Image (cartoon, rainbow, N blue to C red):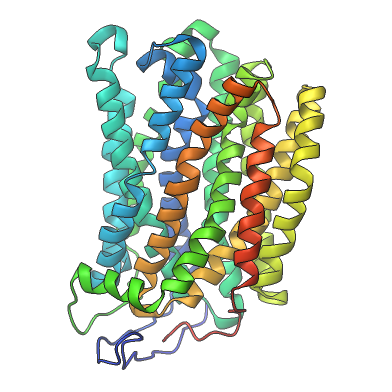
Length: 441
């Protein structure tokens, strides 16, 4: 990789006061891969919960019949989103103050604690009400970590990239999430095929969580070797950094949250396909888990394709066209799936949903950090992603599950996705094209 020229940020973007000196160093491909690997591992730990929501609900929330148990489980999944803004504020500002590397190490440590707790918590039948309480606490820790992960890791990718390859470098953020989804889906298919339904419900769902615990120390070690792309010349408090985001970047903050809404809703509908296939379509567990594997692979591939398209054609067109296509196709696709629920329809619908979501979402994660001044880039993107994911992604699985129970209409996930997509398309149209923005300022 070529070395990025050293540049100095002489004036703070918001108030005109001298703030810091930034050395944008050359970063090796190996270092970028290390950042991406850690990001994939953290998202794996977070989303694996969604894949086994049915079984986790039975283990920790034995209440109100099948849908009551599932509602409690997906509500707890949503709880993990509500600490994301706090993680975005605390860890995002930490990354803008102390550097990207220490912030990224901290997020791995936090996700480790949350994952260990989920894997080790006994069932409700064993310890009673303490079980769901512990699960909620673990989800809160995981949400805190993810809320602080996206900003620093994406900032590092943007700042490390050659000017004409920023789209491709930043696209690894979404691609790494695709890796996480695919590996989670692979585990789901494997344990569903090997174990009986009774064993899967009793203890088999814990295996994927335990697997990640083996890899997390490796991720910490790798991230310790990352070079730092930010050097501070003046200490600022978290309050000052966050205040700069809200006072100087309010318009982009609101637009970014609305854009993130569509991506997180689509992603969560994709993650929910396992539960939807089992609970609503009554398809076998192994087939349901295979849909996640397909979705993850296509998220990885089309996330990277989006990065290349961003560098060639620009960010806005790569964001908007796939989102428009998804808005128009999602209802007919779910109508087909509900009418003919089998392996072909499930996998095709999952594939189209994942590909279009990755194209649009990857482009947005290129444009949004490019809009932010370097001095507040990590915090700004962390807040956009965390708030958008909390308000929309964190509630998606609960809302969809509840609406399915109330309406008995299998097209509910499609209606919800289409409506949110329309709002996000309007927000995308209001953004400037950022391909030629100077990200060293």
